[in-house]
Amino acid sequence: MLLPLLLLAVVPDAAKIVETRCLGCHQQGGIAPMAFDSSQAIRPWAKAMQKSILKGSMPPWHADQASSQHLAGVRALDPAEKSTLLDWLAAGAPAPEPFHLKPQKAPTGWQIGKPDLLLRIPAFPVPASGTLQYTFLVSKLNLDKDQWISAAEWKIDQAQVVHHINAFVRPPGSSYVKDAPAGKMYVASRDERAARRTGEREIDRRELLLGYEPGYVPQPWGDGRAKLIKAGSDMVFEIHYTANGKAAVDSSELGIYFSKKPPRERVLTISPADSNLEIPPGEPNYKSNVTATLLDDAKLVSLQPHMHLRGKAYKIELESPKTTLLNVPAYDFNWQTTYFLKDPLPLKKGTVISCTAWFDNSPNNRFNPDPTKTITWGDQSWEEMNVGFMEIAIPATADPDIVKLSGTTRPAGGRQ
Image (cartoon, rainbow, N blue to C red; front, side, top):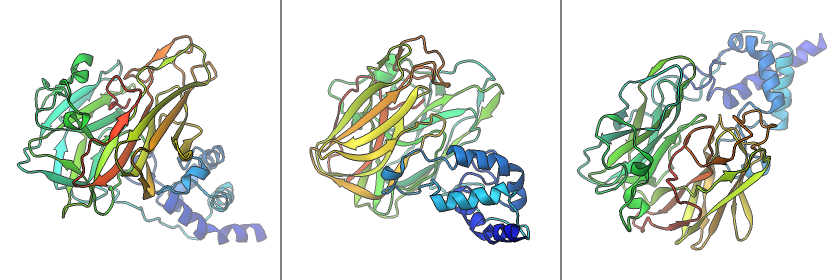
């Protein structure tokens, strides 16, 4: 009877691990397909959980251990947690009495709190099959004064068919999809999406407020930091639905939270991108690199690599001195994490941030739609992208035009 007694002794530890590492997704109304909110709920999934933990696919965390030390919200299990959980699951997840676990977040509704401004996407019918193009929706904000935004949060209605949604702030006078009708779903041509006035700065054209993609977790930008929406701006939603064999109607929402006081720092999104990709057929290790050079001091807040189905690995580094900020040795298109730093990293004027992507276009890549084709930049999953999304913070009154990007000749905002 000694072994069962030892196993029962680790039940509280195992329950705590599930609560802290799993319930963020595995709760009622969460993004995972099943809830692990009690011992009875976990037990039927014990073997599947074992396999996922041994494989390293769960909990989902793709940054390596070394570059995770300075990151917040690390979901990866440490060796002791892994051992405890595997022993408990191998025994069938025993518990002397049924226990119930407390979700880390509200199971329904908004995770951050009740939004100050709610933007809804009109009910959109997604067919069971076929290729859907990027769809745009212009929402009038009717703000009569500049407004600082401390956080924003997506509430996705039909996650199984929503591959991504980007919310862009479009300032007054912007050229960005300027002919799209307000309040109606609209498919903009490539030329419309790329249109730009002569000399128009990117910050005056559009700015990414918040993106949703598989693996999204709501996260405020931190005390004293906010994004800015100027008076008279619109919100432009860039939406990509993906048919999955079952028709659905999506009515996703974006919640916006106003700052209670003026912030110390303004948060900006920068996105160096390699639009000149040309991945040869069968190439197992194609390398692509882009950079962002700071034209003034700033702080790094978050990082998110973005590739498609041929994405293999990704690394974000400082050029001098050579410093690894993020290393993702096994990129997963189906779980695109935004990695927040525990403490924003101060960077000096002239700092070069390098984003390197590796792609596998060989038959050995089981996700590869067609290893016989040369692959270039494109919206769809069977095309490719290299975008290094990063959020930086600058003094609230500073000029926001503080970055020079390499490699970008087409719009870099889209996430497939």
